[in-house]
Structures are given as C-alpha cells and as structure tokens.
Image 1 (cartoon, rainbow, N blue to C red):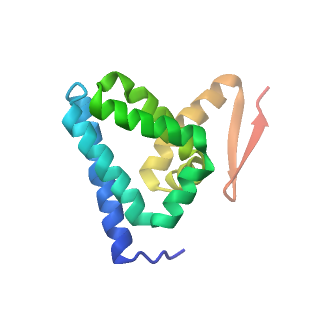
Image 2: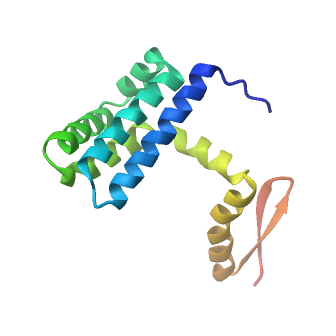
Image 3: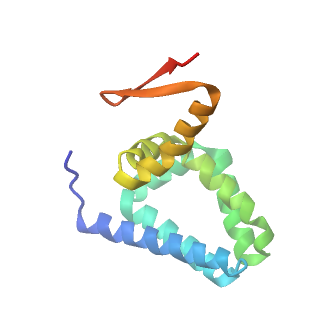
Length: 145
C-alpha cells in the first residue's frame, strides 16, 4: 500500500514528533512545567496541521467527556500544577480511543516492533497451555492438552 503524504502533513508529523519528545523530556525531568506545556502546544498544533481544522473540530466534538478532560488537564497543567497531568492523559486516551485498533494493527506489521508487541501475548498463551499457529496472517489457537 502506498500512502501519499503532502508537505503540510509532513510538517504535522514533525510537530507531533517534537511534541511527544518535549512531553517525554518534561516527564523524565520530574514533570517540568515548561517542557510539558511546550510539548502540549506542539502536539496539538501537529494534530491540527496533520488532519486539518475541520477534522480536528469534528474529532473533539464527537466525544465531549474526553474533550473536556483533555482541555481541563491542559489548562490545569499549564496554570495550576503538574498533578493534573493524569486528567489530560485520560482525556487524550478517550478522545483518540477510536484510533488505537488501527495504530496497534499498524505497529504489529513493523518488523521488530511487531515482534516485541506480540511476544508477551505468545508467551502468556504458552503459559495457559495453548500453541499459536500462524496461517496467512490469521492467528489460530490449538490446544496442547
């Protein structure tokens, strides 16, 4: 499958990458408020640049609870303190919960990342007494007992 990415979408992916990097750096430096705020702004600007204004508004309008938690967490992290960061993460997961199956399916097809993601599942299945046989990208469970 070939995906065409425009220059604007490349900029959006770059902003999202920088936003995630600044957020990770802010978390690793004991929740530095400036880095977290910069990461949030870059990440949100990257989402808007990647999918556009209209699609972003539709995404946030579709899920009111997640949007409210995300915006309140963003505000409280920037103004009050970092103890509200969990609210922002919860809102982010709720708003973007429709994308997780697509993202996990994409990540499972990457060579090393897919193996790392699927290895714990295969290990737990073997502990339960099942063997996994892969037939044309379908997972079939065969009982060993």
